Image 1: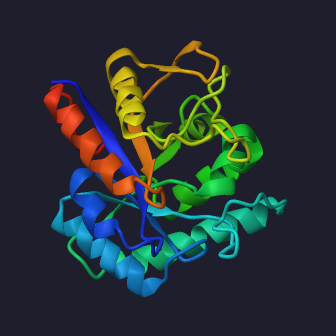
Image 2: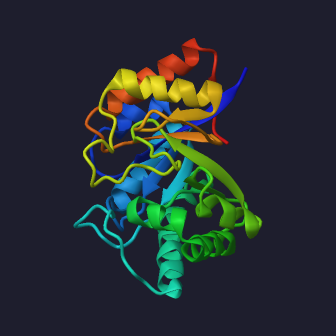
Image 3: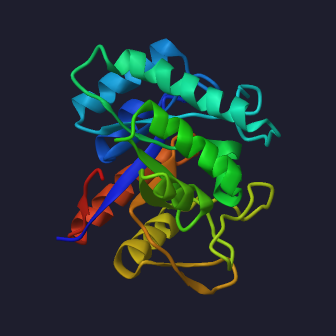
Length: 246
């Protein structure tokens, strides 16, 4: 049976984690810099353990006001430090449980910048490797994030999205554009099935793009996130596609 990882950004204080986590295989938990706090991290970790879901850190720029979605120009040592500090925050909580940290996925602007900028991607990869070289880095499929993580000897997972649209070059449509998000459940499910079966996605201009897909993401703060999680889970199962953590 073919399989794929199904992940979601959680622990962001939205209030729907309990409804979403049973349907996913990997959880990217906010570390307090764009959303969440230690109490939310602890509760989300417990939910992940209860549902046998792999636990990931979701570090971001320190930007609670803009939910971590504003680009910042920081020296490489500051980016290294902010990633390292957030890994320590979540790991301190995980160490008191029966589980362990499984992966790291940057959030928001940090994710998008690392996808395009090899220097930022390498800085994040260096921080992750120095913290724990067994961790997996989640990054946009085919991007600098994946390439630089692989170069330093980390395992990297190519990530694709159920609830975002794509440009002809395989990049995500910027959130500043009206058609950046997929709000329709049927469209999201269709995109997921196309990705899982064909390893392609159709761009906003109708072009089919080949991509590597190790893990599929939905955003926990989306207006239809619970319905997306349930429907994607059911559709993958009905099509005999196994949902499993990397």
